[in-house]
Figure (tube, one colour):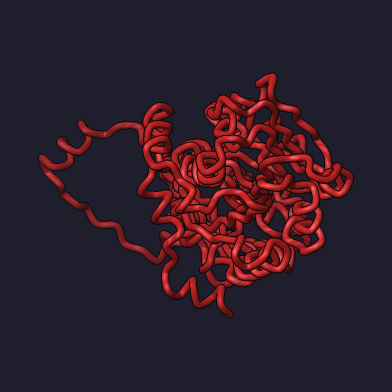
Length: 427
């Protein structure tokens, strides 16, 4: 070898768009391509960009492998640089072409540091050389791989351990579970965060205990969505509940949660639960009038199979099957991240239940974009969200069940909306 290193500039064309937008798959493919070429992997850093595209680098003891992808063009630019003659970068080229399902690739190899152009000098490190040599250890690989939940203007990134625990592309959506460093295991659907082990309590406690503690007579509850099981878990803390019907369209969500999120999904085996794997919109449309005391809309964001859960027609049917004296709670997006959906669902409910019977309230969930999330409590003659609360009973319940987010103060404060939110809902 007549140079210090080999540098191959690679272009892959006709790749799989899905793969080029898949951070964990690209990272694992790049790491494997480096290892297969004989390199010693030191670290990897990969990130997803809005609305699509992945950049990353695998640092190897012999230099690096870097990439940037353009899924919309099915194109990836890859940089393979190896020092010495112990690593063959062409092996990495072949591996990545297969991994990205490229139609073809082109590459240009350059010799870096041609020896005939260089003059070597002796560098005497003296005792320092011996000291450093004695401290040499085999490098330990580190990984910095990020999941990003985003729209065109705002993004939230969460670092995870690199390999997905679960991934399945069901007939409806892509269901994944990641093991994150800060928030434990995290369920995502179509690249949107649904819940994480560390902060799911805020969502599930607030969507359930606000209506349930206001209305201790509720015995028959319907949950639309909620395949992770967190809402059912919280409902069944209330001993007066006789039956919970949960309608989840995607069996993959339930199966993944049962296997990998037991702290949420444990109640999915409870005998009081009637679990239906079917379309919640059709189920509601076919249900009898005045069937339920409480209806919980625990849906994902208003895209894909959940889009119909944000429509006037759906909530008219919800109103029809709710008993007199009953209530609904619905997750209603973020005032900052999805402002239009947040406003639309509130106005939709006001048009159906009446302005005086619909109340917006907030919770703060770090793994949701912007952290601020909203719910709507709408009643058909059920208790007022503040005047109807038995504070002593609610506080005792929260203590008995060691709730992590809900308490009397949080219940009361949740309905105190920031001025900018009040102005949105008036518009």
